[in-house]
Length: 321
Image (cartoon, rainbow, N blue to C red; front, side, top):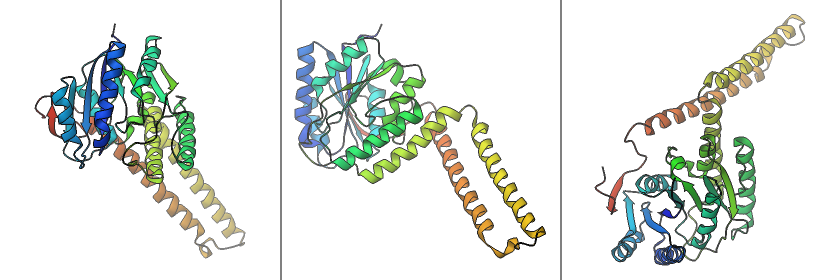
């Protein structure tokens, strides 16, 4: 049985130099107090503020620190994927490097794992963010819960604890890290949520804008829903669309013929039927092409040895391939 006292901390970093020493000290102090065996894997996601130099300094003092440096910014999902891939221990804990997550909440998450859960997600119930960000986040979390059937209040919280046997099954790419609990639940994992602290950002600024992030989440949610519901039976999805479109076309054609026969109006007098058919067709083709592209990307990244990132430099990891 997996030991819940052996922990790999996966820490994505992007321009967080000012926070790294305090984060390392907070995690180390907590682990020593609780008696955990641990490692910290910092993944520098293309920082340009000297973050990796700071990580090198920390690693020189602490053999439990390992690090990966990307060639450029690949995104938080790629950083988490790289850290999870290189982790060694039975429990994987992810958290942001900006000090808004509190390492002292980790024992509470591990206690939930010890109760039989496989994934414990943090819930920033008292968030120190703008009202607009909180409002959009609540609406997005409700939509994700409704569509996926996995009910969480805060999908965006990076502080999560995972049993390795589940998280290592999930291929990560794009911006799918927030949906790890969804994929794991579909594999049979027991998922729960715990309120955690959320601190004010001490240094720097958020790397995410509300509009851009919301749009990406919604697009990823469409992909997740498709992969879950129709990956083994795509004809149910595409066939339904075809039937609906053909039905609309038949109704439109029949109405045009009726108008012509009854001499109420010549159907060629109005551009609306042609415009409607054109817009619906183009829209559906665009959606289908997008879903097809997602399937191709999934196949691409699930090939043996294929990764969604490239490594420039490592500490305690081995030579990058």
